[in-house]
Length: 159
Image (cartoon, rainbow, N blue to C red):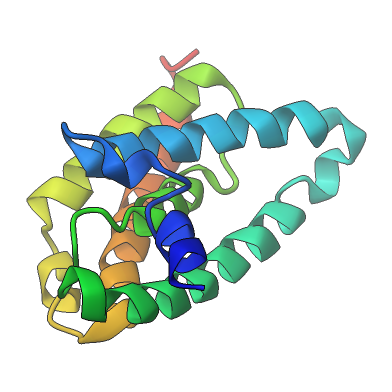
């Protein structure tokens, strides 16, 4: 079972990247969004497009807490290989944002900024022990990225 927990916690392998595993996890989040977009395009149900993504994001968040708690005894506290938190944070960054690559790339840049810089209380959430601490700082980074992107896409000069 530990192997399955490790695979999920490592973002389906992205966390094993020898260079910038957190960024690799966020890229995995974008890749999974592209798959999501392929199978659940917005024009299928435009008024409710984000509801299934919210549900999946919530499920992945709770799964992330669980698997992180399972792998921390073997990998240590908040291990860099755990990137399911980056996947969830990336998904939060694009919730209720019109789905296109321009918005997704801006969301990616904003999310990585907030995840790395850890301003506005994000760093404080890392102090929470276990899976919740690992997940919640990226949840808040995703929320901040989403809020900034919501403002950007409403600017009159943004295409």
